[in-house]
Image 1 (cartoon, one colour):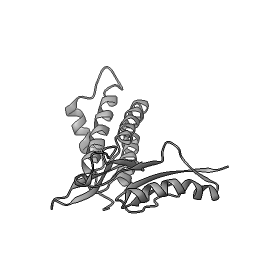
Image 2 (cartoon, helix red, strand yellow; image 1 turned 90 degrees about the vertical axis):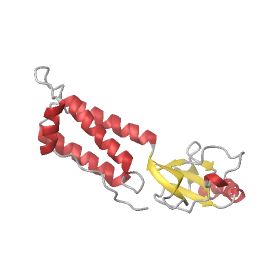
Image 3 (tube, helix red, strand yellow; image 1 turned 45 degrees about the horizontal axis):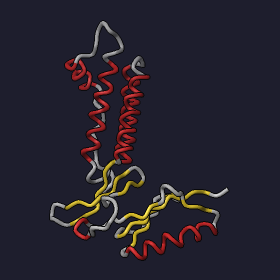
Image 4 (cartoon, one colour; image 1 turned 90 degrees about the horizontal axis):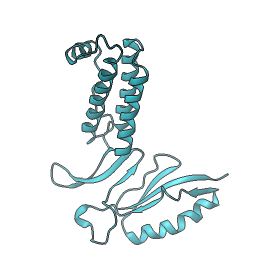
Length: 198
């Protein structure tokens, strides 16, 4: 039984092997990238591996100023839940930045909303502990330099979902905003922080 390997071959990016089944190969020249793309399936087949047909792609990932009019795509790609894109640094140099991929962000928000809905009648302390654990896990993975704004967005959304479903525990005493703010003074949700400086 052959295993599938997901490959992104990008021009202008270094080689990275974060997982055994997923990798990014960077090439300086487009011709080199095309040659690798042609040879790689045969090399993998020797070891009983095959490349995933829809998740394997050849992407033009150059600095925006180096793009030519014929280049396909917008020069970004998603890999391991992060969108990689070019942006200017504070000193004006082009650098590669990373942010939480849009699909992963939507999935996280939906999961938080669903969890708060299902567990709205659970004890408050249990809800708080579980939400903290979920947020810390998210911040641990996505806490990379340049992604702080989206980490804050997830934390704000967790507060919103928690308040919404707490206020629906009972029709007689909904959780008003002022009451929820006092609750947050006792049950402080984790603050986002940058964990990885890559």
